[in-house]
Image (cartoon, rainbow, N blue to C red):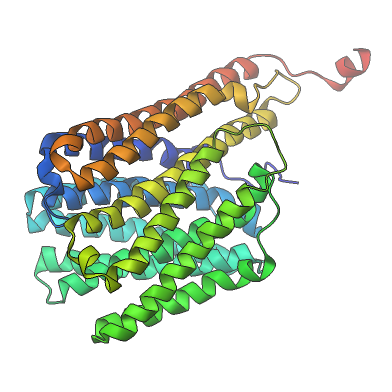
Length: 436
């Protein structure tokens, strides 16, 4: 049973969760301003800025905030001084993501230098705090193994990102294209996919009422993927093209296997009542599977390799289709539960606590998901035909972020009102309970 003393204060993870949707809205605004030109190349300043608004501003924010919340539950270890730790991660990460986007847009080395300092501080604090907790885990479960691999991948991702920032900020000499490919692979396959897998081992059976993941898969998937990713990186960096291509194919199959396994479990749900977050998981895994198959086929097909649209599809599917969808769904589980849990603990014997569905109704979740799904489909269409679909996609993207933020802030507003009203009521004594 989860103890109130084990969990960090609500403000510690919530600051990440309510800030993150703003970065989706900013990415949408940037796409509106730049128009179809943003899709001229993945290397355009606006495209790089929008990508990092999503990956650093939204994805990293939520993933690190969720880790601070989940470690006491999943690992059994509490992060010391959670408020201070959260602030040391959240503030520089938020400012650093904004500075990095500005640096890509204006090209000024000073902005890259400032962004690198801020992001190095934020990610450094996160890596130290979470690694110390993970390596003190009393029981090394499959989830702990996956989280350790994911944090190792994040360390590599951040290191490669700082190196690229050094190229733009200080003129470091390095093979930019190769390092960019490695940075992307470690961030999406290593950090994001392995973290989602580690969390999924717990939350998919728990929230979606499915059978558990196969035990052999749970213990072996993350370490095998980490080893394959390291081997692929060494081969790609060393110029062993055919060997890297074969290793990349195995990596793509591994990612596809995780997606297929999760989709299969979701078809075996024992709960027949609909869950609005189920659509988020299905969309996420379908996008991951499609992206993995496209990644698998592209190196072996000259037609796909030469098509500029494929590069965009290989970015949209794993980032917005996979990661944003699953994070979107998890936020709708985490935030109402945390609000309900903290209200229960603080208002026991004082006031009636609203249910999770009263804190965030299913209808609000479904409406925002339909906007998200429209944004995903329009982004995929814009990758193929930018002149027609870029502006609708950009508006839907911004709307997704705004609506998600409004829904999460609604939970916070209800939490604050109920807490204030409840604390104003005198507590019920044991004698009054007995007389009642």
